Image (tube, rainbow, N blue to C red; front, side):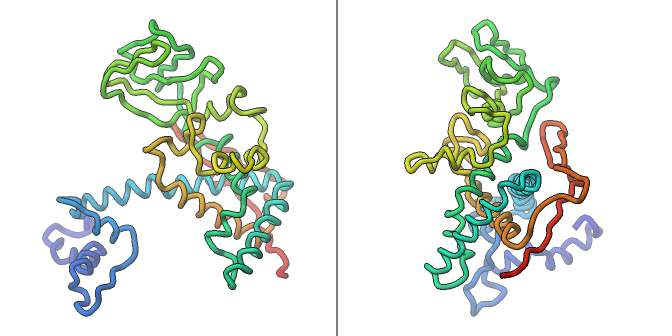
Length: 314
């Protein structure tokens, strides 16, 4: 709309996607049809309350949703592919698992095995997906933005501190953080550490995943770490989508990311299809692209390259 003069806005607005969706919701597009379009915008319109159906509000919500969902999934997928290329010894075991799951599922449903249920039968791939972001987290922090407290004690409660990082003595002084919150009322922790009302605090989530008291041999990349650690009773808690007090990549508790299951299936489907159809590596003379830190985020190198070689069809 901003590309047009204001006096043309009423005319141009008629041809925007929002006007079409609203028309469809009201049944004006085709009075004989009760069908609705399937898509995020339609869902947002369907559940809109009060002024939420305002185009500006819908646009802001759509942008927020995109910010939360698109780049995060893309980053993890890219890092997983980079790690597979750098560690080819994992490719065949994971590929064999994928092919077996597709074969088994194809027999059960009587058609091709690319079903949601087949993706649940790929624990090795799931484990690799969980290990990759453990060592390449999406968020980190710079010391001049934060006021870290390596040791909890009442005397270290400083109301003037802009941000408190809750961490244990064994964790690095250069924290990678997530799960940021604001204290709406004064909070006193079990060890006496006090957070005044209005204090911004955060948890060093990535550091928890690299703490030797929590993760054995944390500096080593072990693609089957969670697969090997799983048993029938612990399989669920070692899945990519699992959260707990030591794994806050998706948050935890009732505010844990509700889209993590969709993200898991999308990443798994992309990686599985690529592994079935291609061999993955890097161009001659090149290795795994480095990750780039910018502000409080970490990204895979956008100029990084992988080499995909089509496999012989069977």
